[in-house]
Length: 421
Ligand SMILES: [Zn+2]
Image (cartoon, rainbow, N blue to C red; front, side, top):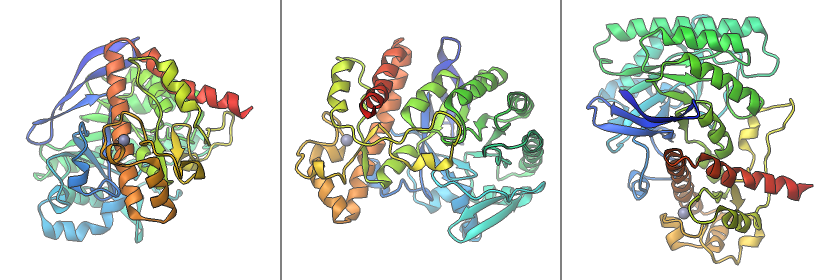
């Protein structure tokens, strides 16, 4: 894997391409970008064929050990790895520890183990078990074992320091087992940067992790709802300065478009794309504007008219992880009665299957009658809209129009706040 940067805007926003991905080295991924979010290899609601009606999908698919750990024996018996087991099209497979869309219970890490939560409950993993799982899954990249339980409010300095030390010890142990394993030859490891909300610990974690032979970095414990967005940006900026330029930085648990923009400006390259899934799950459709070419003001005005609800992150203290579950200003709620006779597509001009063939009124009808097709159609559109946003973000970076894009995406929030008062 090689990260080629085309440009770095204002010292930190990075535009480039990750090349030579996968064991064949055939794949590439543009940054800033995101991974394809899946449950057990499947984008929720979509078959592989439905999924591939969409253009410009990311070439990297994310699966999580919390889903896979309980199937270890089956995968070991199958022998050919998870990609083949799940019937995935040609893709780079990235295996992370936890599912970003499902917060897991805390208080279960020890010096020697971390725990993941599958459908059958808790599974405790030692480094040996963790690496045995990686051998059974056969990903192209995987996130190293990490103690990430420092996102809660009032985590003590001692606890944060311990999580950094443990995570480094886990990484060293995983790398040792990795190097001894033939099955994992050519597979790349992402080191995990911890440090809670303590700047010195974040910097120490980044500096130490960068000394190890890792291919990239996961920035953990900065997810939506866990801390003030300004503090998050400050920590990411500091961490970015410690990390080598030529390796990608993946931010976990952040997916809202406004937060994505801020984190790209702080130096993040990759995101997990669980956000469109959460939007789909609550019966909503992404509709925010990222079109910066014609007249962004007009586009925003039009959208402002139909904004209804918003889940804002609280500005001072009182953060909680369930902020992730609340509706945001970037979507419309199709269960709302106002859409029962709205015969427009979800988003005018969107080229996805759902917008080309169906109207809001039809989706409203599917949702109120609890038809599974509602999830399918919403997921198609939300996935297309979200990935198109990342396309627009890269285009804006290439053409020095990031400010324009930011105004287009953020003004909706400003507009909303005014309305609320
Ligand atoms: Zn659409």
